[in-house]
Image (cartoon, rainbow, N blue to C red; front, side, top):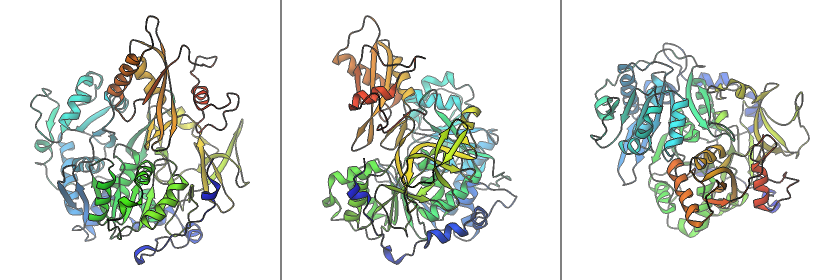
Length: 591
């Protein structure tokens, strides 16, 4: 239950640095907004159509802003590189030419498995120019999640590093029958004897910096983002080039990006936030995009904010909570006067964090809500709008949201304020997913009566602010990462001692939830601390540290439905000491 003393508090948002918000009046903007109006702010391709990479990079060059810095990269070791919009255009053109030279055709899938290095951003933009479908992968995944996604997506090209290839891909190459080309970024890989593997420097750097993007249908698939489901394999959400309209609008309205801003999104590019807002939205809006290779460290991050003169910052609640632990003293010796707007993404932001940030930074974090399937921010707290701590805010202009209840024949829209129901969005909108890879029926089930059903429970108050209540499924959110219990359970069952496994999320004040597994052993195996450590190590090796369970408990039997499905909700109720007959207070529920 949210603390009423905080949620009823109104946080007034100051006009920082004398910069007027892009959206001065929410109601007036909503009344006058059209997606056609957003389309007219973009150029479109000279030969016809709409291409994300053209709108993000090339059009700025064509209107005389080619010398503006597009990317400012800071390596873990302090190394620095930067690309002007002209240089980024030429670099991504080279990658597009490299794909064409190797016979890679429009519609084929290019996978990128790297951390925050410049070549990743070049590959994403270049693949889109070549009209390929780009799918970034989280580099901390273990071999099994990587292979599953590349196999599902029929990966034709993989861009990665020699170290990641050796550790996580090479041993599973026999499963990737469609993979024809592997480009390795970084140090030499002379020990990799595979004719499909080539160094990036040999393949890309020698290509022409000139490339003409072919006409691109706005409905052509551009992005394949995987998001974990509660059962079965990960879901592959398909997004199209028309999504760039939402990247433009949300960057302008929800993140309040102005042309001279220096923007920093801390999300990993392996997740949808790291592409939609770590690449596309800032570049479409023509700002300077800071990319820091390092993971969270408060002192380092404060230095980046200060030294790079970051004006707009988009980060995660987990990082905010870690900063809160350090207190305001850690900020005292940093000049953050350039910072005028801060936003949060990845999971609901605690009301306490909003109030704390007002004290620590002199301005609040603005929470917002969206999903992989929506392709962009759908509900937000805007720069000109008072904040109610704990609220997601109000719907983006052009988006119609509602609280609904499912019935046997459809849905019923709940008009009564402060009533819990499922958050739904009126379809379609430009960045809405156009399908789940190989799962048409699963996709159709997301829509009822022209409404997209988010699976998230929420309520709307009398002033039109939306409040997150809980998830209608049992996907686990840990440090902003979506973790599907089925993937973790499957990896544990691979161990010879494990007969069954059930996985849930346990509330954690720092990362939101931590993964806990309940394991039933096969006959002949005994529960012990040594076996517990062995299983934890097995899971980390298979799944990576971000996905693997942090705790494992042994059970003689796991609770099941009559059909044999493990009842994760019951496991969670018992773990949290909730009444087993009434699970309505759980943070997550089954669809």
